[in-house]
Length: 127
Image (tube, rainbow, N blue to C red; front, side, top):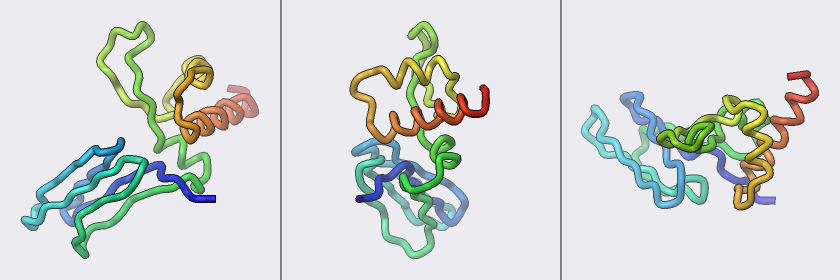
């Protein structure tokens, strides 16, 4: 089974973290050293600049749930749907919100699976 990306990120030498969150999300940073760093691909693929001094911070779906819940995000427009979009981690979502999203169509299987696991963990711990 092929591992799936859950985070596509890199740290540049000056400590800046750039992250590509969705397909064709091309992000760049000009580092304090004058070099330009780029990252692209979101959770679909990794495309990046090739300098020898960056640190890749990519994570995959074989990470434990405790890591995935803090990395995977969901975009929300607030409880009434009238707020600007805000991305929250699965760990930050309340139980009712998780239950509603799990029932929705067109949720990426990777995200849905993590949400289901989160709900199971909360149920087992009595939350």
